[in-house]
Amino acid sequence: MKLTRIVHIAIALIALVSFGLAQQQKSDFEIKERFKTVYETLKNDIDSASTPEQIAQIPNRIKGIESEFAEHDTLLSGAFYPKTFEGMISDLHSQYAMAQEKAETIQAQGTRIVELEGLLATLSAEIEKLNTERTELLAKLRTAQNSLAEQREIVKRLNANLAAKDR
Image (cartoon, rainbow, N blue to C red):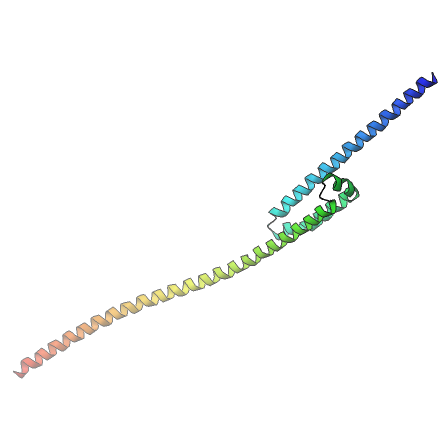
């Protein structure tokens, strides 16, 4: 009877230990999957960040992931071998630095575009002014040519009148 009781206790202990290990494995799997989801989401958000506000939020999100999963760094390093937890966090920081540089470049180009658009507007106005002036000058030239032709005609008539009087 004692032997049966000891066997039952041993079986119960084995069942409890097995259940505990299964729960631990499930928990480890959940931690790995949660980290993977959060990590991939943040990577995608960094890639698609285009405004200064979006970029400014990224360092806090990286710190949040780092602090949330730091106690599981060994588990995550093993789960994502050959990558390590620290390496993945470092990759996020590097990706953030590139995104920040990209955003600064875009902002600088945006400023340059505004400057060039202003210059284009100024030059377009100047061209319009010059075209108007050219049109006016051409009209004056035509008037002057007509006037010159009229004066030649008058000179011819006067010469003809003088020649007729001289006869």
